[in-house]
Image (cartoon, rainbow, N blue to C red; front, top):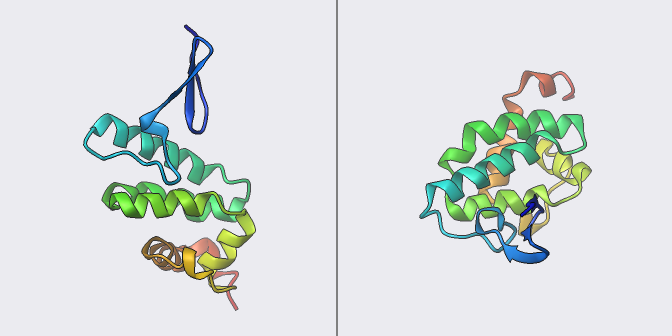
Length: 127
């Protein structure tokens, strides 16, 4: 009866069962259950604070608790998709060093860009 959480599945008794609360990246389930939504928010908050790049941890880690509760289901999907991109790409898009590809130039990325401009940690690095 040991359960292990994976990105897209929960292992129970040796079988893979889709865990709806953790099904992100294009397989997001309806927000009808607040328990599912809470699990998704917790997962995205955790991933926002553990990206592997300190700059992204600061930007995304302060963005998630402030904006996630107010995002629509589509925007949560966009944010999840963005979190699956390489850390340097996310940083360069959010800070405006490089333009994002059209598929990532979303309302969530625009919110992130606006949020990053308000962070005092990053203002010192801008020329």
